[in-house]
Length: 288
Length: 284
Image (cartoon, rainbow over all chains, first blue to last red; front, side, top):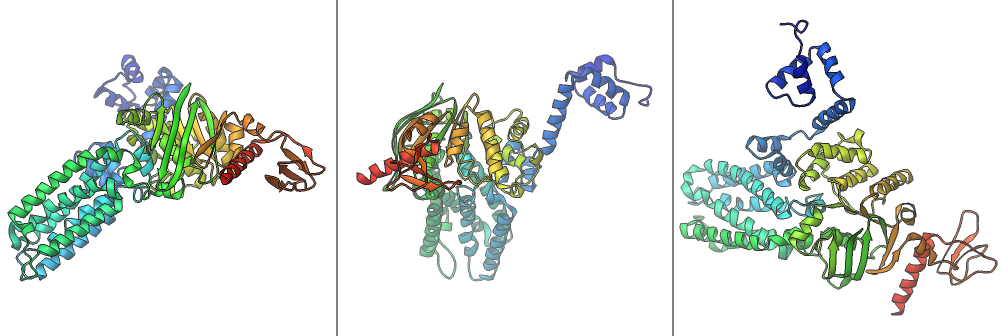
């Protein structure tokens, strides 16, 4: 049937103009309107000019709306709500440059693990992998890395929720990358997954300490603490450490649980910029 | 309607007293906050914006107590805040940035319509698709103001929004702030006494962490009544004196020889107040 001999019925056109037409009839009407000047003219007579203008403005707004970038589109595809994906998309720890740096670091750690033929534990990978989410989280939250941090703090969305969202996203990304790296060194067996518990423990501990020590000192202290712990427990030739045995892993998991509880207890501190320490807060340093 | 009531607010940063026993009330309309650098203006605004808590004092904002989480949330839902140095995600367009802030403000229904509304309110419809890094300083300030306007807040706190703007931009910004102040409370921190004389119904003067004046701008000017002179010479011991465009000296203080008394401006009253406070401070 051509557009010359069929037109939308008056009643249906009225329903469409009132916004009452339902799919699939609405889609069919829209498709016809696109090719039929006569029906467009009839529609224009039924709709108030203000409503047409508002419709165009809404269309404009949708066309202007932010186009999802790579990370955001991926998150939406993975089932993350669109507005949450938008919040996560500007997380520095999810930027391609940071993820590329993580990938490169892991590649170097893997190569070192391959080269360390005498070791029974891939210590370069297990030492470095837990530091990556720690650094990733540290660079994803706070006034030094989030340009609109102060606006975020005074917004109704709880800052702690934003922090957890970003942490979860950074942890997921680094865990996925480190998981791939672990698969690449299968000769070491299950011990290669020994980075998982310390990753969680270090990240949570650093967040729990942030209200007391600030967003830079806390992760730095935790990171150096981890390296010191490794230096004290790792056998120099085999790379074995109590940390990567079953009791050690259980201890690290328990530490992660304690840190999670401690973080929950101090969550209210993230509701203002107080957790940064007044002296450490750059906005208070700039001017009082 | 009283929107903000503060009594005895104090805050220290280590050994520095940023605010000391500050009491004030804010009503509908635009209130100016004047004060020299380091007076504590930004600290006061950050407390009122719920970014930091005070060490001591009572505070009610829009009927809620920001000292507890529920009260803070209630305030934040009706607050628009433009910090002194608003940061932007430079890779965002103006629209994208405002969309991001709208999500932080928990605007769910008609979020994009709301973004369009505030872009229109600040006259940035044509710039909405431009990256923020490509916008001029004045336009960025307007993006910041648009962010503060999202969700039609009952209280707006603007920290030196006219700093760095050229005269034309400053004029446009004042126009905007005057419009915004109709039907809501706006607290405008500024160094410019012209901002106060053109858009503010009330004015607060903060110096050395203390409120030195609270009242109408005309009353601030009135503080210098009978102390402002114009004449051919600089007065000895004047609180402030400068040569004007026509070659005469504008003197605040005791009358120099051959000078005539003139009507004081807000700037005269402000200088008089600040200088008197400084003298009192140094005497103490």
